Image 1 (cartoon, rainbow, N blue to C red):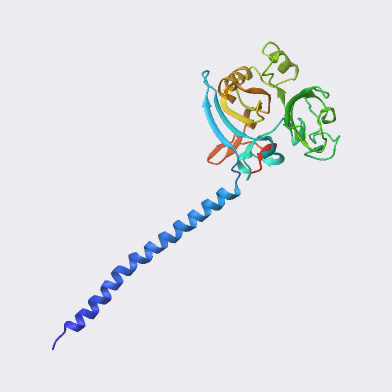
Image 2: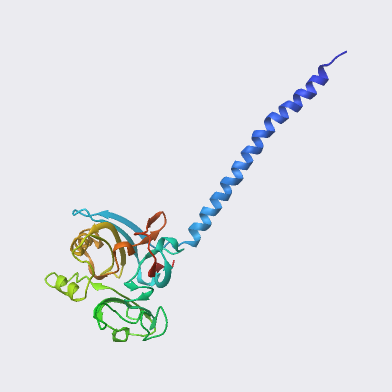
Length: 273
């Protein structure tokens, strides 16, 4: 009796099983890889793209994490979270206390929280003194012009069109005032200016580029300002403001997250596109 055909049949079945298993495994791996790729592409498409992230370390040791963008690519947002726990790319905003905004935070004539005139709404720069004049960075969209205006109330801001601007309060940096910037900064009640803390700032250059800067380096205000002048803007910086610092200094962009001490903040500047 010839058993060769029987053996050939079973050998063929065995060979089919041997080659089918890795083929199925390979298909599963390929499908998972494609799902991962699609997820990555969708993630990229939903996150802002029109910015440039830069890192630099100044001669004094201060590390600068910078988002460079244009003023029309920024929106002021209220949050109740750490910046890195939000879906937004950007940096922390001005000073706050128990959820109340203590720095001007206004878009197109409206404060970010509550109604015009409400305490903590973003209408006022507030400190130890209730009527505190502080440096406020203003983007005048109609005039296509940045300025730093020292005011108490958002109603004092000088803009071309009250319905086309944004303003973020802080403390004046005085980048064109080498002899008087420190005196002005102290008068505007910059907290812990001579202590080592993380810091946040907004600066702009002569070409209307905006730089949102955070350092996790524990440094004084003078050290932070010196590092910015050395490393940012290629000698074309015009002016800017210091924002809230210490554990509130937070930044988020693609693959870079600075969470400060992970505390909640209540306002940020977020990229739109």
